[in-house]
Length: 430
Image 1 (cartoon, rainbow, N blue to C red):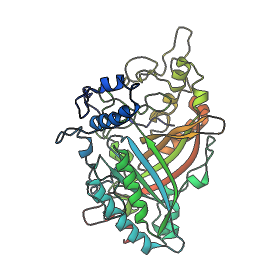
Image 2 (image 1 turned 60 degrees about the vertical axis):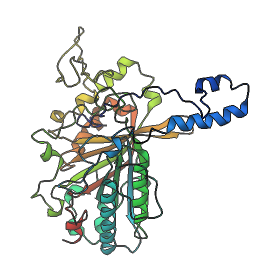
Image 3 (image 1 turned 180 degrees about the vertical axis):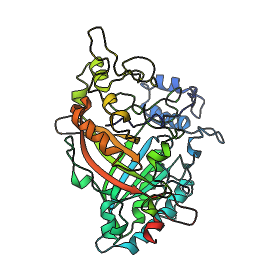
């Protein structure tokens, strides 16, 4: 689990806590008084409870509770949305397989429909689908929709000659316990939004838009902290309670574009300004992790749990002193600490942009939580990004005892489309 949930993707937030409201029912009786007399009249409590609940939930007319819903991400541009930018609080990852007999013609029609629909939804407009109206009352809520093509897509559409070498299947890793049914797929869609209903609505509309040309292969849902939940922007935390993403590359860094995006003159040409995404469902063995003491957990990661600072001292962004030792001569940051092993300078300079969602899918038969992260990382070439980092982690990462990779996928994500174009047009019609 390399160091991406994101420093460049902190939770933003400056929302002010709302003041307590003293709610009265229609007769002018205060809610506190009503609750105090609940024992006297059960019927009164039932009636008044409904009135009070309605009054507490309904805002004053014309007074918006927040501007969160009005946040908008552009659909058209040099790059697709959902790669850079802040982490959203709700997300869905979905893979599709083209239906039997469907090929390039059906793929073109599907990508046209999907692109047009995503553009409307991201602009806060209703989809041209009368059967769905889940997000009627909401704005776009920073909705992003991102499309990618898997290795098998090129076989299904007769475009093998256009398949990038960077899309070759990932090698096997010792921590893999992969479920094939929840891995790979012809097409991949990432949806993120700061409103759960907006995110679900987008997923449902796009799934309906597939018609008979494709079927869902797998789907996973995740979450992050809500914008405004912290007093000031901070780096995200994962379900192990660790700050996650401190060393993520920033868009203002000199080599950011080179590390994350295929150059405009790249090969193949249709991938210009695109990126390659590795998706991993990583289960955290939380029962085992939580048996460790606070100090033991920090040694596994190599950073303080409270603020993300390296164990060698300083703040979250302080450079790690890798050779610093304690009074007994032991390395302060253990040799197998996750933060040490995953560093770019320990992996031939390999850099990945990590964007993730946490997930919780209930409990297994033993009562252990099925929870962890939906790991999503972006790079210009996985051979120089994810693969060398994961190989190094596979050989000597202290964290590997407490995680398990259960699903995997690699997808080519084309560059953004211009107004009037659809995503993947240069591939499918080139």
